[in-house]
Image (cartoon, rainbow, N blue to C red; front, side, top):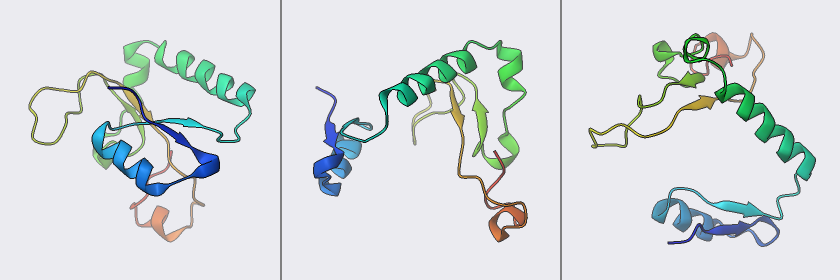
Length: 111
């Protein structure tokens, strides 16, 4: 199976939806993001994941369902599957003002 490619210049939500259902992720082309910015993102991610496990665990947020921050390797698992996923990751969401109703209510936690 090959990784589906979504062309943002000819965006078709049905193609994206099918790819996400069938494979779970896609490659994106013609997205308009400068390649140096993409490279900077990869370097930042490499630095983050190279931190010690103890340092990364300080940013875990199980109290908010891990909606933000770090999630350790082997913590998550697919629905109805006992075996853990073989990944670690970092969640970052949109930044809202401190007085925003979703921030105040705790519905959207801070980054």
